[in-house]
Amino acid sequence: MNLFQLSDQESFAVGIDVPISAPSFALQKLENFTILFICKGNARLEADFQRYDLQPRQVMKLLPNQFFQCIEVSTDFRVSYITFTPAIMQEITVRFDLSFFAFLKQYPLSPPLTADKAEKHQHMLQATYDLYLVRTHTFRLPIFKNFLQNSLMEIYDKTKALFLHRNATNTN
Image (cartoon, rainbow, N blue to C red; front, side, top):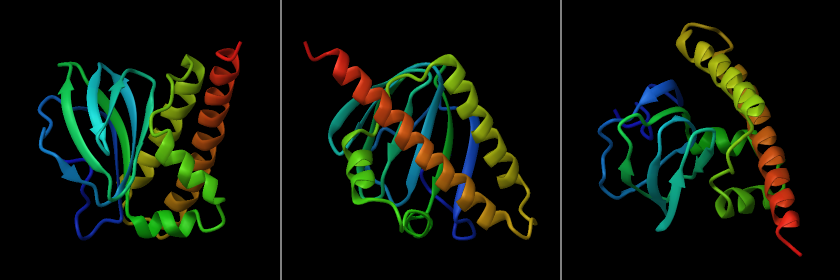
């Protein structure tokens, strides 16, 4: 399973608590946006040749046209994910400030979320997954776009706050 790819019939895909026991270690150029929530275990990966160590309760945002390579994963590594097309991203972020995209590129990996924030994030992912499973829902795609837009604003706000707080406490 490649959670970064979408079939021709899908504009998004969602997975909950998916074990990643045998990832592809090949370098690949991503075509879609993917948001990973690390549920369990650890991994080391590279995005645009920058190395990241992933641990539980972190959120990793991967962008189209980034080079991605999985270096290693623990045997218990599990993620929840949302993968979606660049067209969806363009539509839902048309009114976002350009600093949002610079922020995503500069800070793709969030610091670990607190337990309560991680639980709220998991609830949002579960609601998105439930919607994903109902393929006959008339308003499935508009509801997904709404969920995603709200989630991206929340990720941006919370991650920015964590980084600003961390940077402020490290400046003495």
